[in-house]
Length: 377
Image (cartoon, rainbow, N blue to C red; front, side):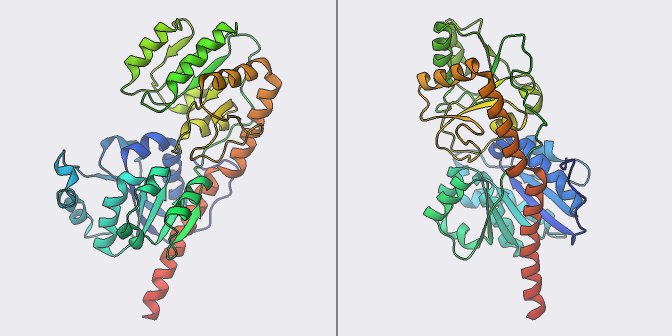
């Protein structure tokens, strides 16, 4: 939904956009992508969501349509011709009314988006939300891309360092979310402080180190409850680790049953326990909802400003994480200052209105340039 304090957008030229989304990007940025799709309606932009996964259907309602395509199973998945053959049905279905622009979100959708842009001679917008997105760019895709959108300054720096596309426009458009009005951390003076982590249960996410940090905090006589809302292949291993560390009464494995907005409500501290090479909605939601956020230095996000919007650890060792959580538990005034700074940061740099307006402006610029060339030809 648009920001409540945003005035109605000016009437824009009708635009059809094919938004290509891979399942990983959807899981990481679902609320952001949903806000973007809804906001486009006010700008007279019609969105067609293309994905290899039916789970992305959560973005579709009203005028927002969706088409899915089947990805071949291994080993055919490694053959470009096999993948292109499976995508041909989508191209045929779009032949009567092709879109005006193709917008690819994250690396898993780049190949399909390029085929679509080539088939109908369309402008291609490539949206980078992870370091891997930059690393997986290949020369033919870079040459075909007419505009890049990057979600943070570190990703932009990586793009300029590794690719430096001189022919394509590059725009920094940060993911947008609704921000709360005031901090919620420690708003209830009574009760046990709640620590939340929404990282997936996969190698390298740092959840195992967070469990060790929880044990250290209990040894230091700190009182808290820790909620882990992720899922993934390491869940059994992490549950066994929690039992071995005697954390059964402190750490709760809480499978998410609804939107992340509901999960963060009522929690006091949000921990991002690893150097995250991706942008995801979790920590941004936590900041927007007034939680005190702990993050690890580095990674793709640029919203963690140490001592201003978050408490930033120099590394993700268990001792560092425990020290950071302990500081916030012991200094609630500091926690509230961090949460206030986080809300202000989201309101300035991560609003839905800014995300939508900048994206639409990118579309308009490309269409205006193409139509000007057509008139002059």
